[in-house]
Image 1 (spheres, rainbow, N blue to C red):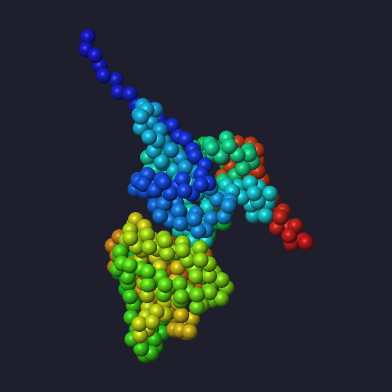
Image 2: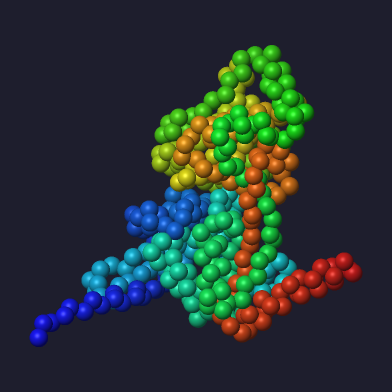
Length: 388
């Protein structure tokens, strides 16, 4: 009798979690963390080491922690567990004015895309491990919020599918759209469709008037260049404007300035930084900073000299941004990160992307009962507020 070899399916991985509040422990994980980013479900720059570690060191309140998920193969007894998920989380004891405990994906004021970083091979397993950990470790009424997800993102599809397959109650909040960029056949084709003919004529007129004042030049900083001096100019330009007066400029707080310098410097080293400027007689009158990640990017910050406001230098550099994005074959999209009613971005960017916040009850009752009653509780709170 001939022996027949029987192929056996490898045993599914076992997932473990580690709740971290000591950032020095994360510093030592840079190598495996960066390896995870290379095999991620999608780029999640705010959860990658080069952006998250500076944010934790310079911006994080005491309520922020990081949940790490590891995968182990039972058959590979001597192999070290593989880091397969990084979840930056903020612990909220009140949520939208209601006494509800929520674990929220940390979405600080400089976040690009507040989704966790997940290995594509383990994305479902790592997400379910996180949901199981919340259900088993936290009070049964604890909810999870994933804010400001793009509706076309891989993580939004994943969390939607897992919630449906596992019978978890979820609730979509704060649904809106914001300005988004997708290239056309050419920059001219794109720009010829921006706003109205009257506005396009006005923008050309403003550029001509600026050129009458001196030598007007658009600049693009080469990838990998030293950006130290450019950042100093950007910080000074921002401080001289309304953000400086209101205390919201990067230069207003030392920790925020350090965050910008660290992430921009590292992005430049990775050749994932796109810097543009508009100069009049060598003096910067508008500067713009983008991050380019994978096949897309994020328009992060812009600053302009308010003494030239009547010439709209910010819009002029935005139009140059569109030209440069068309000139880069690696850019297939840009997210504006703008407010839904942002007048300038909605005028010059022709596309929109859907943004949604997902609230989930990781277990059954009573968490699902709390989430099910959440819309009613918010309505009652608004009604009582109006009656006060």
